[in-house]
Image 1 (cartoon, helix red, strand yellow):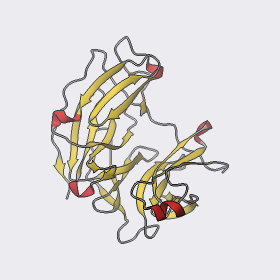
Image 2: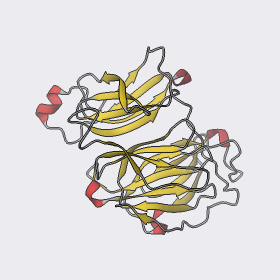
Image 3: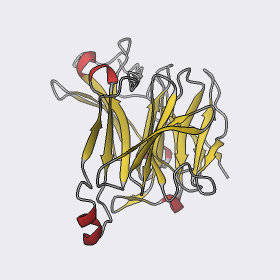
Image 4: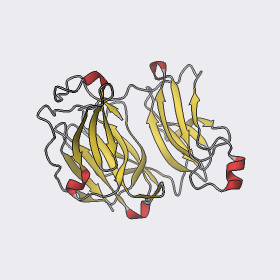
Length: 271
């Protein structure tokens, strides 16, 4: 769910301050939370995509970048690949890269020159370099398969704080780590109590000084559930003086005429 930029243009029945952008399967729509008005922006089926929207983030130009992934029984099917996409301010969808499964966590650094994500197929933390016009192929930031920052873990969600440090969910070990982007070193690690399978992380609360971490119980055996009694809970980390996230970047939309243009575009294969 993303807030809308105050210069966005919507049909008259929508109030910008109470409207957000959401995804429902392959449908992207605007919803006014106060009066329940809805507007279908686009369907990803229009460009032949199947699955569901995975991770997403907003560039400071107001464009939405997101992944489409395949899942079954609430589990990501990374072997089925995925697609990396961009939505313009007019609501049109363009496929950027096929064959890349960016399942959890996607975020920009402070100056929006790099977009970080986790390539689940190749077990690599990657980044895309951007300017206002172009985006590069993904580059490996950390090879999690050969040189993980936390052994026996998998990345399941990321966020960036005001200091331009990455906060990474290390599922399997129940840790969230603070990573210096330049040195690729761990500055701090936080262990969630009795919950090893973590699924996402984000900042919130007053002035974004709280870190919220979600855990999962999907796929755990009864014995594992007995040992991980907090599996499925959401944790709030607070009380650290130097812990502060960034305000979410809003999406800029120009949909004053109603439903957006039909999605279009081609993509490059990532291999």
